Image 1: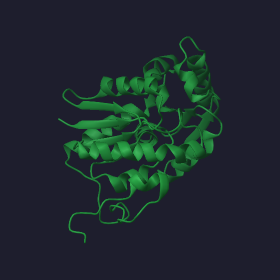
Image 2 (image 1 turned 45 degrees about the vertical axis):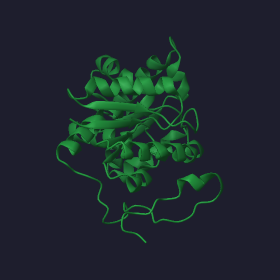
Image 3 (image 1 turned 135 degrees about the horizontal axis):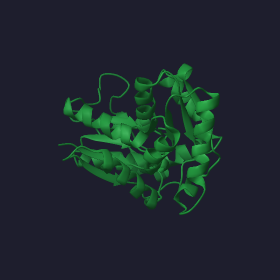
Image 4 (image 1 turned 90 degrees about the horizontal axis):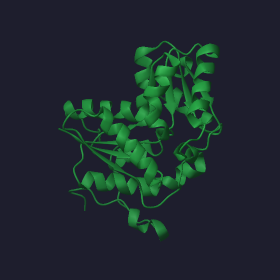
Length: 250
């Protein structure tokens, strides 16, 4: 059975535990989930600046997972940060949770909506919807809940997300909802029961996609842009990230 790395790109360990629990709840019997976060980087990923600075630590963890021989990597952040870079570094399949959630929604609903955290994330998610070919069927809504507020016990976050889901159903004619933050991973079941429509968590969707890819023996193609990075020197604080020489080079 597969070993899957479920990687939270931020450094908040409590959120990593929530994400890991959601992944294990849907994993097939025998699938091993390694839930991790980087040792360096932002406490949450809320916009392009945070996204850029989460990547070094995230890519270190991808490399660590590769060295351990994992069968797949899930980037557990709805911005899908560094997805292409991770595929260059990995031979095992790499899936982003936005990618997984949006594709799953497209299979069960004609129209759907993403309900995310901050308004600044809307443009990023709209870009991803275009990339994944679902923009014409997908609305994006923000609750303006900071990511780390999802960690506060007894907060009103769940009720605010539920209210935005209701508005997406009424105003956007959404037939399904995708939760637009990996930190919402533990809410999908309760929110679906409240709304009466499917509510998809990208972490759960990503785990099932990776199990399928692993079961089929599929790996990341190295025939094109996902080829390993060319060896060269990196300077300063990034010296340790210099790409290693591929077997047979030199």
